[in-house]
Every structure is written in structure tokens, then in C-alpha cells.
Image 1 (tube, rainbow, N blue to C red):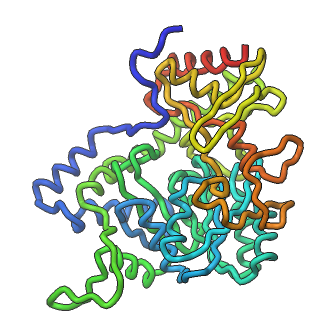
Image 2: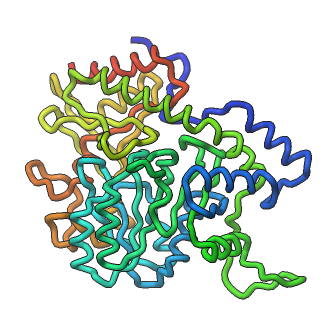
Image 3: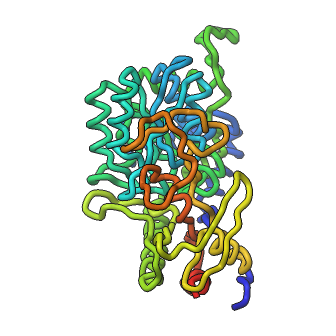
Length: 408
């Protein structure tokens, strides 16, 4: 097989032209900074789509999560339960406020936070009052079960819906289940602003507080008066113009992403792999990234350090390292599954709670036959496939053939 003439990306921005109209509107009206019609409209459209009363446009999804942590009144030394298998932007804002992330293991059904492990965490740390829940790769977790556990112990839920804009759980949009919620418009997301994010809430006081904090906490005075710490977190009217132009195409992007997922699923049906799972009776992901996990019996030997990986080829078997290196050789971009937070050097000493463990031991690698550490297992056997919605069917067919070749 020949390499792709053009690189096949994991997930790159898909632009439509309307974005330029709103950018030009910002330029011609001279509203280029953190005030303007694009911001107002982007907030209104997102609020209506997700079903939260208030949306606050910010510079990034991370900024939204940071302000959510502040609004939840996390104080230095407070433990906060966090999804373990996620990007570290889910977790870092807890540390910005001096909190201590406690990582909750993953479950196999959705690759999200395990509600059984979450209940165990509350038994270990009953004083915990905040939980940060991420929806991995656009797939909702077991939200009802998680909310029920949090309600039982009186903890607030912060939903990290950065990857799941447009996904639904029991017909309800993700980004609406927490007391505070965050979405992202980063360049690789299903809707992009090149950057940007939003905080979502039904609490008007919290929304107003977030707006104030995001503009350096300026007080209502004729001069620059500051009585509390603020941040330069507000979205610009130019970025909001890109978001505003993208939003009408959200459902189209989801349809395209789902078609990619389904073609992979059909193309891999005779391979010893499974696609990233979801419950079709309960949730509808946005299919942001299509992923696969290799059956345990079909894994060749693979070893990873903190920065390198190696493997031994075996007939009829493969591993994520081999598949990703082979895709790269043909000019296609894949990615390892998010390395769980409890395995990251910066967080290795933080508590990590599994449904079977005691919450204090460190399990930094999956041990065959011992399913205590689900996140490490998925990381070991899983990978993200090229999921760009501009990828043609012919290009995707070639990606499928490349993956198949790794098992020969």
C-alpha cells in the first residue's frame, strides 16, 4: 500500500464559510475584544441547545472548569473526586485552587467513571463535596447512577462535557447534568472556535460571578476597582464569531462522525477488536473520536515507559503501538487512549479508587487476570483511530486495511 497523499488527521477543524461572515462582522464593527454580538449570540445558541439557562463564553474549556471549581467553593486541601481516564485539563483546575484530586477508576461499559468505585470513594472520604465527571470521547457515562451516588453523599457534580457537545443521555444534552458544566471549542473538537469554551449553569448568581471573574473581577466603579482575584478568561468576539458560524453544523458533524464509527465497526467485525462502547438504549454519543480496544488474547507483547514504547510482533496479534506506528508510516494520524491520571507522574501519589481496591495503593500497570485497574487496561489495549469528518470513505477503507494488516 502507498502512503496517503494528504495526511489523514485524527480530528481537524471542519469549516463552512459562515465563520468568516461573523469574523468580518466583528472586524467591521470594531468589536474585536471581549464584548460584542457574536459573544451574545454564541452564548444564547449554546444555552438553548444544551438546555441550561446561562452560558458564559470563556477563553477555553479549562478556564470554564477552573471557574466551576471556584464556584463549587473548593478550598486548599479539599478532596475532589475526578474521572481517571481523561485529559489532564479535567483535573488541573482542581489543583489551581489547592484541591486534591482523587481519581475514580473507569468501567468497561462506557469507558467513563465507575459509579461503584465512586461509592467506595465516598465511603473512604465521606467529607468530599465535589465530583468532576468527564464524558470520554463524546460518550456519556452512567450519569444517573453517578448522580444518585452524589446526591446520597451531598456532593456537587461538575460535568466536563468538553468532548461531548451534542451527545445525549436519556434524551437530555450532556453539559446540563452538573450544577456547573464546561464545554470546549478547541481546534480538534466537534465544533471549534480555534479555541474557547463555555461555563453552563442554571444559577444566575454563579453565571454573573463567572463573568466578573473572567474579566479580572472589575468592580462597578468609574475607575478600575478590584476587590477579589480575577482572570483574563473571557472569550473574544472574534473567536465567538467562529463558534457562532460553526454551531448550525453541529448535527451534521455528529452524523458524519457516527458514519465513521459505524464503518469502522463493520470493517473490523472479523478482527479481535471492539469499538469504544455505549448503551444504545440510553445514550447517543457525538462520536467525536472512534476508538478500538484489542481483545486480551490478541495482544502481542508491548512495553511502555513514561515516554517510549516497544513491542514484539506476533502472527495474528497486534498492539496499539504497532497499529499507531503503522498508521503513521502511511501518513495517517491516530492517538493512544488518554493515559489515566493516576498513572501520570504528576499525580501518581494521589489517591486512586477502584471498585476492588482500598483507594490508597498505586496500580501503575494492568496485571493480566487482575481487573482491579480498568483504566490501565483500556490504556494498554486501546487506541484512537483517524476520525476526521473530512476523511473520505475510500480513505477510511484504507485505514481499515492498514489496521487489518497489523494482525496478519
